[in-house]
Image (cartoon, rainbow, N blue to C red):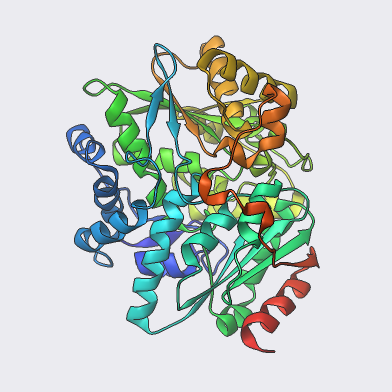
Length: 467
């Protein structure tokens, strides 16, 4: 399995190359040169396996000769053994044709654990084989950072740098990152938005001398291995819900477009998925793009669902690449135009291609709180604000006729990660699991910096290069 850059000016790499590099050197994102093809029977056989076995089977379709299924079986068994629910990704029925896929039973209580836990083991194996070390840099809007730190803090050959927007993640999210005191972990609070953090990461990858000096890699959802791991729960959820080859819809709360693109990848592999519903909050660029072809940032508005407070979704480039029929030149021209003009208006053919697979809705702040309250009243359960955005979007899309039949909503975080919003909506404060009962008593370790690439480089050099 070879991986090519969306922008067409980087050499193809194997899975290990895409894993260790993250962003392609031409600024593009790695994509499989062709999609693995499964029959519906093969897709069901994979989805009906126990979760760790399903993960090994699905991910092996992307690894080629780099990692065989036997090695992946061992990694997956270790990665998912620490999840608090034996089903790993349990599915709850909440209506005649509505389901919630719980993706918050991992060690940091968010869906990012599904990819990060197995990526840590992949990094260990690849770096040991090469006798190399790696500095991982992560921009986080809340959950990726803690999941990456938890997965990589014990890796002997990996240093990890996490940038988070200061004051724009919940206290629980921040402390899950900054209370991990380890010599290979560096937390940086950036005076800016998540988009500022993400732009700094992209700029660092464009600095070839710096990349070579610190041996830079990434585990944001720009890293294809992340998305490969996240396709798995679409298979297991579909197999649990679908009768025979029935098509199932999925609604996904998303800011950076990685989780929902994993669903698109599963569909391209042959999984019978109907529509993929993109649920946005007040930062509605993805809804405007999918519904009207207008991909224009309007500035980031802080919301109760901070992991979605994003205006430039990195993985949207992957969808544009597919919608433009993998025309590297057309994609590169579009992204260069977007970087220059800060706007992208899709042509009718591209938009129509996207709308064949995707529908979308944007949910406001009060609607988010109302859905947390409504779900609590009707289902007797607490949900976090990101899940509430997705549930409200699923209900609206049904009402508008965009979705019918069985709908699975992805629940991407534990409600205890966002206690203020949940308490405001329901009057109840969700309790943290026992493993985090003392979270607010733990010391924190982080430094602060301006939203400036030079300042961030200086911190990384001092921490890990001794310069």
